[in-house]
Image 1 (tube, rainbow, N blue to C red):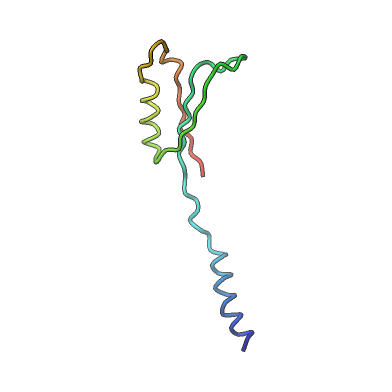
Image 2 (image 1 turned 30 degrees about the horizontal axis):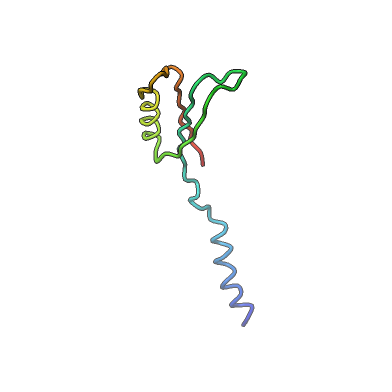
Length: 84
């Protein structure tokens, strides 16, 4: 009797572990850079998690085109990276 109830519990557990989960959700990261990454290391980097690829592109363009006193926009770059 005990063996039979153990089989009833064990088989669904094994089946649940064998089924692939939907944990393959993607994450989107906006990587912002500023300055020249030269030998002296005079560059800045920041990463921000984004809701979607489109939001990443939109905010990256905003970063590139944002006005900052005394700064050149050609020193601002961005990259959108997809992670898991």
